Image (cartoon, rainbow over all chains, first blue to last red; front, top):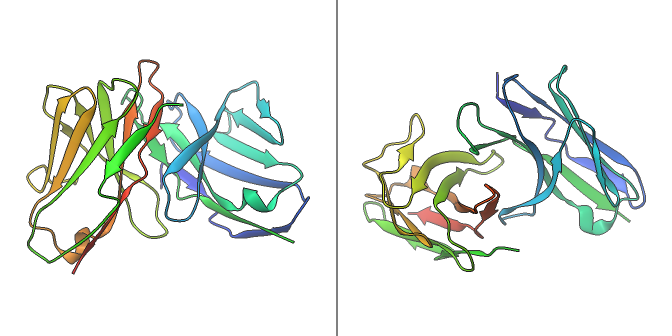
Length: 111
Length: 114
């Protein structure tokens, strides 16, 4: 089983739609959780950290469910510029701040 | 935000040659740098953790003699792919960790081995 699992998509949504991505992680000892965004042939960029209490940044909302080992990302009012691959990332077990990446979920926002 | 650069951004080489990739933190000192590799449609895979002034720590399955890492200063780490072969063709990305353990990624180096 992969350490971090995501539905690869693609998710094709119209502009203005709300879309949700899910991610599961296998190790209950994972400590920190993030969503990164990666554009085609570019490096990943931090979108937001994820906390148990949930957090929101503009149109983006992230939530963590430790009991179910599940992380979500909700994007409201999708823009064309949101088209990218969204990577679920957790800290590597026993590895300090080593990051373990999921394979990513591809989002395509269309007119 | 913090800036990390990589050089070169793209390299094409013949099989058997060695390729050096540089990773620099431009506006902060990074005690720790990380090297990742990403194959098409796959996730970033951590190859090694590089600490300034000490030997790198390699992940399981990564050959330390093939992927030489040097972290000579707080702003520079290098990855040398020795005797590169076509299966080494990939997107190599470094990241640098600041004092708050936040990782900032370089723009990546696309290696193609013919």
